[in-house]
Length: 428
Ligand code: PMP
Image (cartoon, rainbow, N blue to C red; front, side, top):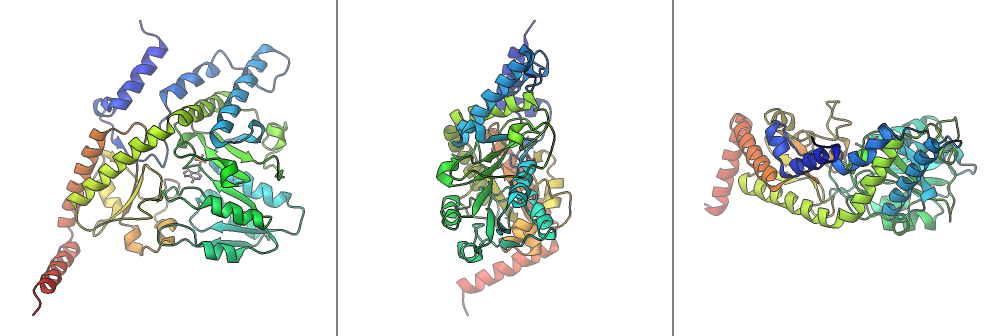
């Protein structure tokens, strides 16, 4: 006989050692920007709230309700601690998509002043860009600020875009495709100097790098459970409560849960899971970031050693520790991924990869159409092992070489480059 705790511990150990992947013939998972596996410790914390502790946290008249409410409030404190917020500033949602929608529509629709102008970064996630397009249809003027080749926002253009009627800036913390950070502290000072609200989509950065709402100067911040080893279907919108207190119009109307900002019975197990995930991240983030970064650098080093004609998209340093976005000249990313069923990676963000068009982020940093189509996103995380990195690097090198050998264009270009190099070395 073994109990649930034992099997959780075993699953955790197997995941860490990579045996799980090998034994089950699962592909090596290198898509941590799309989603992260739920940490077994998170799963363990959630367990009782799917069975014994099923109370509705809004039930005030019995112990079932009280205990569920207590669990949600513990989770709220755990989330707040990770981002330097007060617990009452943490509003549970269904994920970062909803948080972004609530921040943008909520702030726009609540604006009682003549401030209606919204400024966003052009490389934002679709869950920011699409609500902005909708708001534009409703008559809110929207300015999109381009990014530089590094992926960093054009600060000069951002400064120039702010007008007396600007209501809100929305700039993501770290990009989901190229992992590049935006200078939020600087943007926060700029926003506040003009009395403009600052929203940030921090779905990719919370739990991976330190995030402090006070230090960054943000008024609204979105995060998502499944990006930080928590469950899917839960997220948070941080809403500043003091200096200034942010007014939002809710998207959902009903029981008035979450201080009236998000009606609907709280998914207690998911809130508990997100809280525990935040607690784990707070304790382990520093060591984990170092470990993940070392794995990433190891992979990049091996790829560079094994292949010519590869490039890194986005700033090489100022990016998430676990992210690479790599371009392989002469190889179509979709063909490469098809020939690598044993390594799970993606061509762009998972949310847009259903559409065949190249990524708007890669276009924004100045990549040509065929360069975007030659790019893959690699996400390394908590359960990635050095053995997996070495195997993935070996397989990528093998397949890129194989595909290039099949491509007459690549061969002729390589021959031309070699001839040119020869002529430069031996002029005349
Ligand atoms: N913003 C960013 C930057 C993301 O990476 C994602 C997930 N792809 C989202 C928002 C949406 O998050 P969720 O899946 O929780 O709705």
